[in-house]
Amino acid sequence: MLERIVTALILVAIVLSCMFASTSPYPMMLLMLLAALGAGYEWFKLMPKQQDKGIDLLKAWLTGGVVTLVTFVALFYFQDNVWIVFWLASLVVWLLSISWVRRYPEHDGWYNPSLLLMGGLLIISAVTAIFSLWQFSPWWLMYVFLLVWGADSGAYFVGRKFGMRKLAPMVSPNKSIEGLLGGLATSGLIIVVVATQWLDLALLPFLCFMALSLVTVVASVQGDLVESMIKRRAGIKDSGRILPGHGGVLDRVDSLLAAAPVFAAGMFLFNYLGFNL
Image (cartoon, rainbow, N blue to C red; front, side):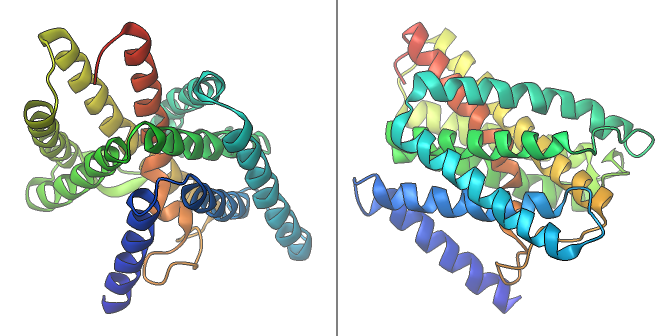
């Protein structure tokens, strides 16, 4: 437990420093590139294996490198009007994954080499979405973190106390429908506080903002479920060991893989519609 707490404190300190300590984009870019490298490497390790472990390891590093390279190009040369293509494409994958989770383990045709390309898309989409939100305002990125953390905490405590009906028993036996509702309620409280205390919204923008925030929370749950399903199919408990007490990079950002592109795409749409947030 001590190891887990120390790792969490170090991670929080690093992330907050990159978000708030400087207006220069380079610390945040470096953090995103490292996250892309770690997540890309771990994603490949979850793919169908070959008999030669040495080749698998080499391909894992190559995958992480390719994902990092594409992320580098996206961060330095693309803007929101290009990133939105990644985000919308990732949303299609997340929508498809709902069926995968519901039908697992009877149907696992999704577990094939194409999942590697999907993983690259999801990681690049999440990284560019996080960076875009940070550019818009570090506080908007912090808001997404609060939504995800609040939902996760609310789901844990409510599910532990009142959880009876399993959400996806074959994928994540500890998650319950009651826990999901508890997470939504916790996030709803965060949404109302932020909207009433820091935003001056008319009724329609407020309703749209609340809807986007709640969809973001649901997406974060789906991100968690999909990573759990892939790990279960691959026969792996943790995606990696780089974070003592926490597992791998994917274990820490699985919820954000889905939540960040959803929220970033919504904010892009709000700006296009002229909503002043």
